[in-house]
Length: 215
Image 1 (tube, one colour):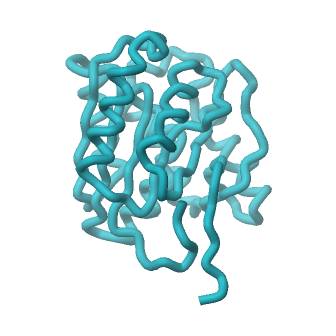
Image 2 (tube, helix red, strand yellow):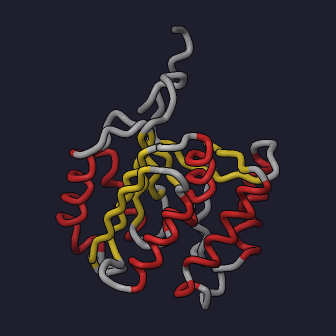
């Protein structure tokens, strides 16, 4: 939980089950935050893809999505699609991350995501980041699991276009996927923009939020 109006964002955490999750779900938000706040500290954790081309893609991509930030990225080697069988390792990684940072904001998958890795990671976050605002990002895919978000980050047309360009540029391993294209990314951003009276936006789920409206 975080109190609205509690001050500027100085530190954020971004977590993903797979390389590209963070960029797809919250790349525009990261760009907006980092462009507005040079020197912002970003602690990022990805559970799978370590030690290979996917990690190389992720490091280059997040550096581009976090311009001017103090980016600290950890990419682990847990097996893709097998997070439930590696629960203790994932939990230990999240707790280690919490031990080295006290963020103002956490970006993570949604707890309602149909992918077991995304869903499992989302359910780990509240056990470690108990007093933080956790925004659950969405990832479009064939499952048809997009919900009704309650929080929006409007994106300028320039940021929305830059997000799509960086996604297509930095993750060549994903270009063969039928949903991985400009129309999918920009189309969802346009829909979320309509919902919050903006041209484009990223949308998030929020489990718990404490307001600070009377001080």
